[in-house]
Length: 404
Length: 150
Image (tube, rainbow over all chains, first blue to last red; front, top):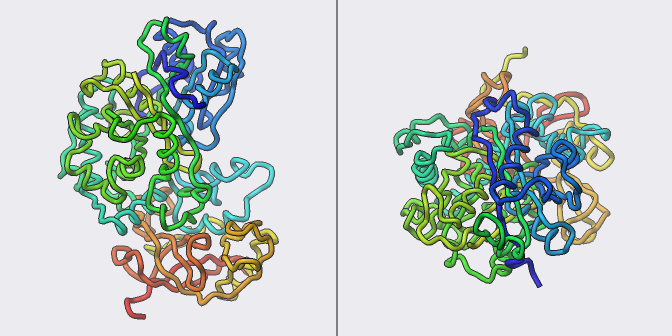
């Protein structure tokens, strides 16, 4: 007994996407409310129908939203641990809440306003910032500076970009991945983005511009990094039974998995002790196995992949880890055009975090739903099955398979 | 502000914030030795020190001095200063080193790689751990890049 096809996404709501800081004077909470109300309306539902929150990366406080919007009764309020890795998995959490009878109509939402929190920022000062944020107990809480910080804070490695550079360098060493491969990821996604009115990046990107861009942290340059942006996206999930009678065609949750190998652990943020076998990966391999197993399909059955792309090389590593190409061959796979529209596995057809907007993964969920409703701007013809991923980051990372 | 040397990351953390479990590392560090806790039951090194051995759940460790050399497992060259104090420091190389005498994964150290141009760093290069004193009780490990063949 699994969650397969028991529930469906029935509504998507979103604010406009803003460059960092441009969503002011709205607050993160107001942005979230707009997305939640939009998603309910999209489904033909109202706030009176909402009874659950399935969250990740500490997006909103259901207590605050519940009182602010007058939710009649909250019956489920849970979050996956850690950060953006839980994005796709929050849909599975919603499905689990509904399938187990705890709630009927559950929202997953992300809201982000980077004028307040710059996620890519440094841990300048006494090992604070990034490392502090990710240490257990928050920014050192009541227990003070954890002793492990003495081993990290003076290393010169301070930011997510540095961390993913380390993974990428190792991937290049082991498999021969090149900067040109990364460039193809960025350029492909830009081509998709410039056709979308929602996208923050509106100009094409050429190979020359990519190689002329400033290096931030070798081997990653400016265009390998996600943008910083503001906005909110919400998805409403309900039972397959109830979904039949709503305004939009249901997008069924075929399978969802989150987690990863225990020794992936906090991985790229503070740990770097993963076994050699999967150090240079996205950490998604065990999640991929489980999500395909639950859905009863294979990578060849997937029509469109929406892969979490805080950094371009992680698209390559996820293409490998989800089995769209053999391990180590993700770079050439992208460079040969396999992720373009009409090719083997169109990937990040909305432009992704790199070129559309960065709302910690939820723009990918929105695009998957648009693809499966057949209304995407860069529509994959006849798309029936979509993969959405969250992370890669510390555990859990997650993947969800959706079908129309 | 103190003058900075390009490529050498100035210490942000001024003390080790050690507890009983990690103190032996810093005691050895200020004496210039690389020491690591080895599981008494299965011989696995666990560094930074933790309460359990991830291989066998052993909780008894003995500190063992290591040769103080290692191999670059992966690295990055940081070119964008993440705070103003690093403006005169970039570009610098930092990375992850597997220490000789250990099993590698589970006992890797992170740190600044010095002693060569950042562009000359490669995965697999040999390094020697050098401790840069911050105080009487805290010295931070840096990896001195060793010429090929040394």
